Length: 247
Image 1 (tube, one colour):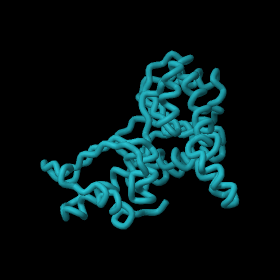
Image 2: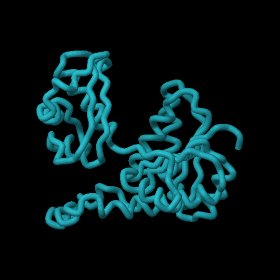
Image 3: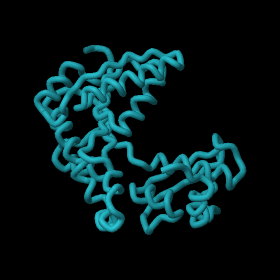
């Protein structure tokens, strides 16, 4: 296939959102959605096409049923489609599943932090990257499945994707809201540069402080750097009252 294509692998909660957003962006040449559950995949793909049409947009999106853990079949599909970008959001178990356990059991597992989810996210991405390598195609792979740990681990065995998405942009948007309200400027005037681990994003949005995690931040109001005079403790604390949102 010569036409540039974005392939979305995994149409769960996150992959579904990505599909819906991309379907509403004009001029994306072609998309292919992939999921192990054919009925669900067809429904999600149709939903994105229908939603886009209500905005006067008509994206070229097709669905293919595939068990991406089958390296041979996945490699064959990749050779056939030659996607320019592969976006992955597969997992063996979503992060929120353990929250449905009785509180005392959930607490025991939650104390392990990211350890329970790492193998859930790593294994499907590992198989996908094996297929990418076996296919021999040139592509860019975007990994949404715990890239903070999965991507470096895959890099150790020569299977690194191009980039991860991380959760830090969710916090970055809230930081911009806080800065705009603290400095009484329009949101568009705020630019923030942030380097931080996944834990930082998780902790600040819930508790209003860094939890001891290291981070780098630079806050610009138009062309003025206000980082030096900013009270960081106050700034982080304001995330909860000023920029709180649904879970």
